[in-house]
Length: 121
Image 1 (cartoon, rainbow, N blue to C red):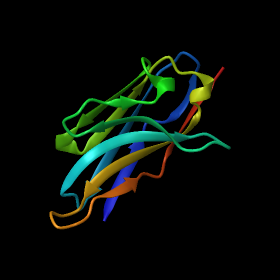
Image 2: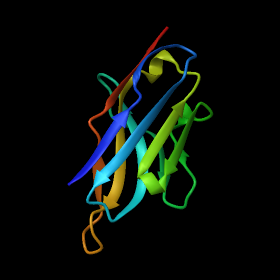
Image 3: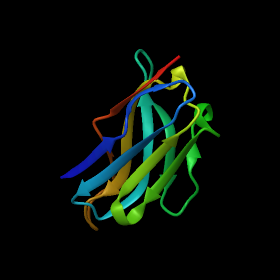
């Protein structure tokens, strides 16, 4: 079993900052990509940022220059530093990991339960 546990969401005023964390635990052999997605009410889930193993981070257009993703491979943890937050950043933020549980197993996507970020104007 693999678990992704997010933390760090909350309520913040526009222009403020939050830092999200996500730790992956359980039966993990290798993690290729870790990242964050978000879903606002009535909208589709969208990529916020992701960081493949050994590669540069990828950001959604709406967060470029404001959000920074980082990864601690030793801890199987990914972080999202969110600065200059806007009301339109309000959403449920989901952690994602593309990993395999054993050398012989298939790669698969795993998701956290989500953490709410609310930005007031």
